[in-house]
Image (cartoon, rainbow, N blue to C red; front, side):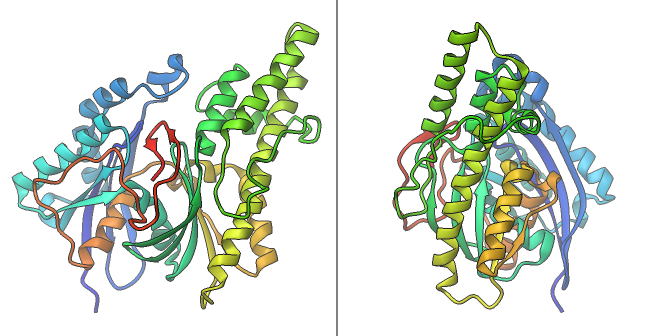
Length: 364
C-alpha cells in the first residue's frame, strides 16, 4: 500500500500569494485546503504587474496565507511530511518571499524542503485532478509562458515548441490596455468578444507558415493596435461595436493559431503510440472558453482525450505545487536550506532556449 503523504505547498511566483495542503495515499490526491490572495487591485492602476509591489505584498501575506491553509485543512506541522515551494521561474522578488518562508518552516519544524518548478506544477495538474497516466501532451498557456510538452514523468519533460516572444496571456493583457479594458486582460477581452463578430477584422495568424510547434503573438498585438488607430483616425474614436469586433477578431486569431499548432504537436506526440492519448491544457489562459472549445475540436479530430483543470486550478495556486512536491517526495527528492530562488528554470533541460522574453524573462 502506498504511503500517505501530506504536503504544504507555497506559491508566489507572480501576483498570487498561495498556500495549500494536499494529501495522497494509494488513490487520488485530495486537496485539503487551497488559499489564494490575489493582487489585482494592487496593480490595476498600472496596467500590469509591478514586480516590486508584488514582492512586498507576498512578504506581507505569505505567513498569513500559510496559517489560513493549515487551519482550513485541520492539520498541524506535525501532520505534514514536507513543505514544497515554488523555487522558480518567476518574478525573483516574489519567488524569494515564498522560498524564504518555506525555509523558515523547514528549519523550525525539521520538515524536508522540496523546491518545485512552477511550470512543473502546471504540467502535473492533470495528475492531481484526473489521475492522468504518463505520457500525455501538455499545452501550458499562461501570462508568462506558452509551450507544448510531452510529460513522461514527474521530472521528464520534452518541449516540442513554445512562444518566441509574448505569451498569450501577455498578448491579452496588452490588447486590453490598447482598448481601454480592465486588467487582467484575458477575461475582459473574452467578455467583450462575445458581443463581436470574429470575421469583421482579419488579423494575422503568425508562424502558421512554419512547420513547427513554435508560436508568436507580438505581431498580432501590433496588428490590433494598427486596426484600432485606423478606426480612431476615421471615426474619431471607438464605438462599443468596434471594440467588441476587435476583441472577437483578436481572440479568434489566437484560437486558430493554438488549434493549428496543437494539431502539429499532437501528430508528434501520437508518434510515440501512447496507450491512452491525452491532451491537457493548464495555465491561466486555459480558462478561456473559446480556446478550450477549439482545442476540444482538435482532440476529437485526432482521437485524443481532452482535459483541462477546474478554473480555480488554471491560474496560479499552491495545490499544484503541493502535488508536484508529493511526486518529487515519492521519487526521493529533497532540498536543503541552500535552495535558490530562480528567475528562469527550463523544464526541458536538453532543448535550446527559445528566443525572446516576456514578463517572466526569457522563455524556458
